[in-house]
Length: 488
Image 1: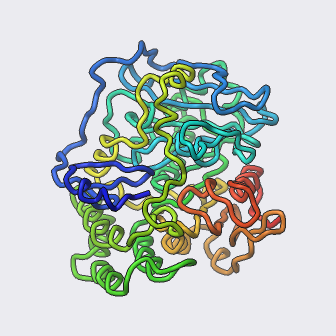
Image 2 (image 1 turned 45 degrees about the horizontal axis):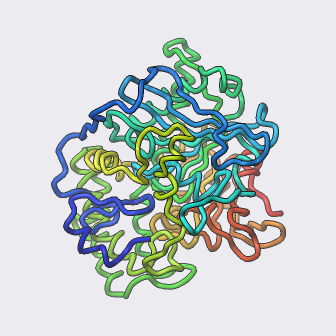
Image 3 (image 1 turned 30 degrees about the horizontal axis):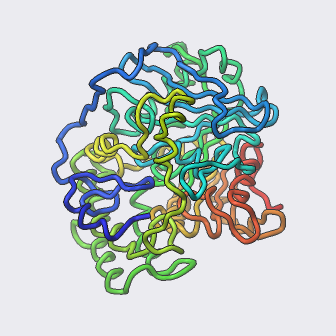
């Protein structure tokens, strides 16, 4: 997925976003542009792609693209926040009982990566084929049991378009809440406003998920008090996969995972030793993240991202695919979506108005400028768990970029009403149809599962004789049904 032969070219580019969700900047995975502007960059369309309808949806119904199950409703289009800010969405009704099924929003990470990644590579009604030009129906789609709404956010991501100013997870949360208010005000979707609501996300979603969920709960409280006007969001579930939540807890995981994981070491001992020094030294990565947490300073947090990713994250990857360490670079799986989603006939069919890109330079750059990457979303996650929202953290054991060493360290550092119980629990085998597919723990309404053989995009992989995404559909179904994880 990261092509070594391009590294020289990467070094020549001020900002280059490669395939998948974490960009390569000046040759550094998740780097910060050296010549980045000191303020958030505003990227506005020079011409408006279409007439907008601020505060309303513009919808194309039943395009016949992707979801071909007879009788299953779908809709795609835009929610116009303002005359110059349009959020792309793609909604798929549940294949069974859509009127009473929960509503799930899916958000990919980046920051700046399109949620079409999740739709077409992971858990949507169809999956991109290896030819990168066609799709096949997905029997393990998450809309098997839930209505699913894929959202390209922030503005400037994927098919979304307009003035691009968002550079923090908090600002992104506000825009998505505004979009959902528009969505629920539309007569086609207003009936879903009282259904159970879930946020599922991955990667940078370790920031997005907790921040969005906490913000939605705050808005619900304000609506109840009468200080905010809007439709309350019936938040019941938060799911975060392979997420960046608490960098101070998670960054040592790069060192330990590179040295010893479920498969093979990623780099030599000398590289690991250098990275360890970069972590522990005076003014090193640990000290810089700690300072970021203490000050919440834009420059301090941005510098911490630059240093830690240059000296720890990037060099420890070696020549293995950072999203799937069983493959060396380059790994063509999951297949690229660009040819499929930039096809003019398809774009016309679904109502897309701008040329799709997997990741947005501008959005990523804006977040890099604010240092949002190195901020701590764990307090928000703790708030959400303590509020009674059923929460699952999941991870693939073949993912390096947000590996299970770091994610499990973050989980173990949580301070919630269920944390003491969680620490006392032992891992149990997560079996699917009698086949072990991972290990899991439950405590109260909190669950964690590590899926064997899965890379960064957990539902994109299969294990043993299970089909692609089958293990992911089991944990999704159990959690969405209001249950803890269990073996089958």
